[in-house]
Length: 264
Image 1 (cartoon, helix red, strand yellow):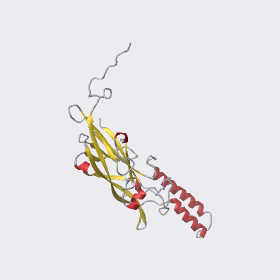
Image 2: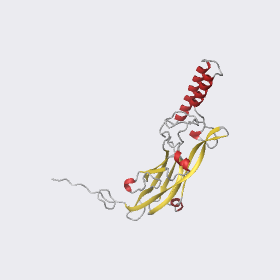
Image 3: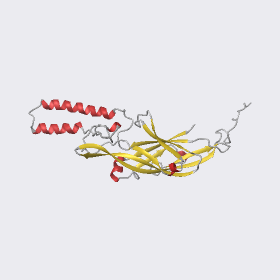
């Protein structure tokens, strides 16, 4: 059975957008640190792939990689799927309730009424314009801060959508060391899609690959607020080693397990 290996792609989205680069704002982790992976927590991760072979020289097992992108300093991906929609709906209800109170509190057009109306507009937040490029959870939602509070687009700090891996390519793919593809999944955390690859662990060596990652920047366009996609790349690598498949009890080749004998 193939071994499963997870690679976390953690992006400081705000800093990456500001510098227009992922190289110093991406932190990669995998679960092979104790098996030889280098560069944990940096953008220079080299993932250890421990291949093995049978006594006849044939490949014993393959490796399956799973890339999981997350945003640093944003709303955690583990919140309920409808969280953004619920927060937007609640802010609309609160704004309507405040407008009702304002309508019955005093004469319209006064300075106090104007100031209160401006405050209500700010607390109601800003809804993102729906376009063909803002699909899924980005469509029609409001801008939230990292605490999940609805904010206006000019409020400063806000939560960014999770990074999206759109392609994986490079030496490791060209040399047919790994075969990456995007797959559908019922996993709600990844929004139903994730990138995975099967690795040929029978060919030792270090092979580089590149991830193309799409971030989203909050912009104003023709009086509307929308998420503008920004495509950047970051490099990583695989280091494949092989060793004979051994019996965990005897440390020798596969064969008959030792039978314990009773001691008098």
